[in-house]
Amino acid sequence: MFTYFIRFFKKAFQFRGRATRGEYWIPNLILAGVGALVSRKGGEGNPLEGAFTAVVMIPSLSVTSRRYQDAGITGWYQVIQMASFLLIPLTFMKPAKKWMKTAAIAVIAGVNILGLVFSLMPSDGDNKYGRKPSR
Image 1 (cartoon, one colour):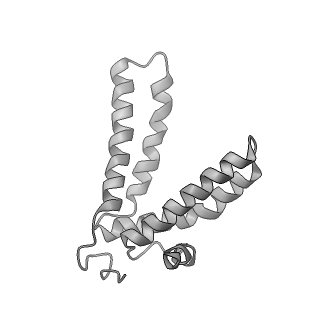
Image 2 (cartoon, rainbow, N blue to C red):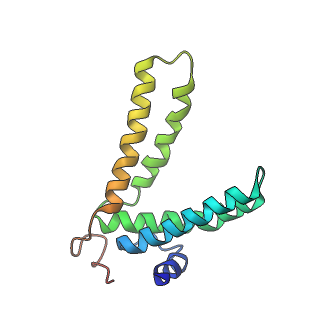
Image 3 (cartoon, rainbow, N blue to C red):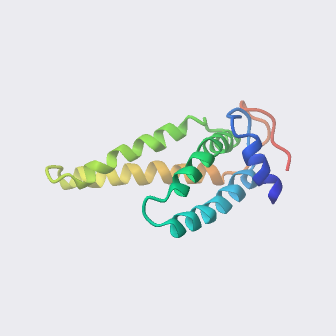
């Protein structure tokens, strides 16, 4: 278990290759818990929150890229996921029609649910991103 957590930081700048589901999910679940504690304990303007985010941002992007590639999807899909959040202001604009707001929410949800599905997909042998990772 801690092997995955250590590998998370050791491969922080390695965007090529593949990552198993365990290599992706174990560190992310641990860091979600730590992040919740950090944000809860510090109150508003917590400098620890910013430092925590800065420390885990690049390794998180890296492991997500490798996890998607393990599923046979390009790691660049993350850019689409991040860009989808640019639609959020549209949902709060008064002049925006109801269908526009609904469409924006549907796009954001759809793109990110698809990312979740990609992260849950099993490894299927060797692919164009490399050999199947060993446990």
